Length: 177
Image (tube, rainbow, N blue to C red):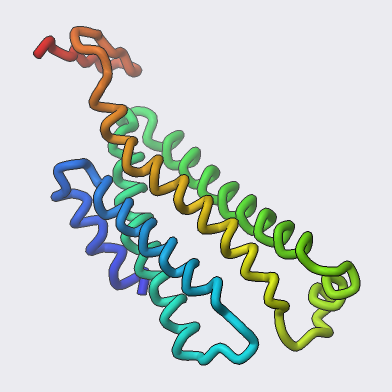
């Protein structure tokens, strides 16, 4: 899903008058919706239901990652694109690792110690119903990301006018309007 929709999300970001904010925010909303669907997983959940949730997650990721990367790299000065790319990828990886750790911590805190040990040893055939708490925590993180995604362009547009910004060898002067 992501490999098919991702390039379309990037094109949409290029044509978006808000600089990629619209597709990125919609992608996060779709991912939050997928997490809401995942909250209702049970050991008897059908594969079609799971496929729907994972398809939504892939669609949301496709709409978010490409515009977000384009916006971030577009904001970097040309002589700092390598640093911007490295920072973006580092932050992306740190975010994924931290969210995984948080989800595991929330899930483990909601279960008895013996069940946690059995799950991590692989001796339990199903996940307990309390695993939905990890999805709820992820929903809250996604809602925060939605808020940050919606306000990022408006904050950048509110920079003081008449200020000269220097970046490396380039200089940009913002005019009074």
